[in-house]
Image (cartoon, rainbow, N blue to C red; front, side):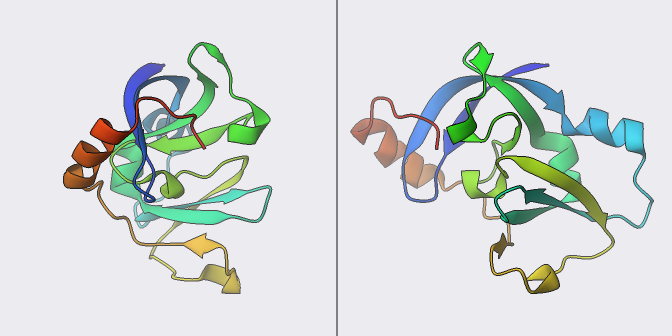
Length: 141
């Protein structure tokens, strides 16, 4: 599927109107059929990073991306696939996706992994307004 969405970094920069291509997380859920008790999803990366999301948010907004701006996603930006969730900051979208794990409850610091980040923080629209005026274009990190 194709989706146009903004990309927001918690460090106060944004890139607007990105053209993504990938698989909607909802479609993945339709295929694998998570158990009814699953309430969260954990994405792990080949570099050791992990991040979790409420399953409802992931189903609604997550996209497992393989193309950006009409080109295959470059390795430095998370290729061959990364997760993009436009309603939260970019650090909630894992690069270099290795595993997708469905969980019955949220686990802060799951398995003692110091690179697991939790807690979804919605994008602060006030920050984006300021950023929109300061930055014209920036590459996706």
